[in-house]
Image (cartoon, rainbow, N blue to C red; front, side, top):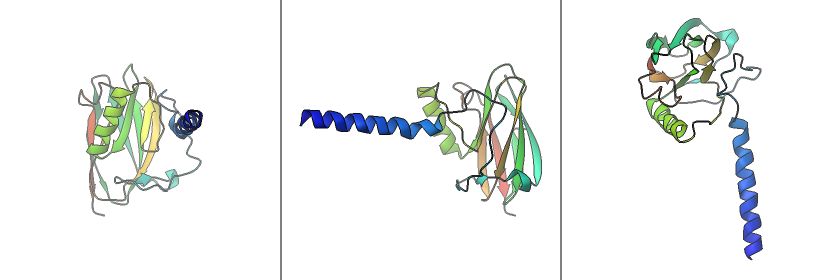
Length: 167
């Protein structure tokens, strides 16, 4: 029985490892992201946008003073925004869109696992002096946020606000 339990635990561990592998990819800050396939997954703050359907481009600058510029933006419900995210600092920064609860939970996970790598359509990891494009459709009205969740950056106030008004 002990041997069977060991095999079951080993198999479960192996399965858990492979379940996490697809998430490992992007905290390296690469400049290009493959958007060959657009995810239809709906989040409380919207869904990945089709670059061909972007209705507006908004530049977001990140700096080593742990701030975004602009720190607040307003968009209309249903609008697809092309964000051009520029890192004007000398260290890696990221822009992650979400609700404040989701950003707080993700920041806590990043503090516990600072080397964790992931790549989602609502986040952009940008090396110093580089830029990246993120396209997002805001399908729901409300107040949402964007933040840099690299340990210490979020806590230092690197957070912005997105107000989505009813279309």
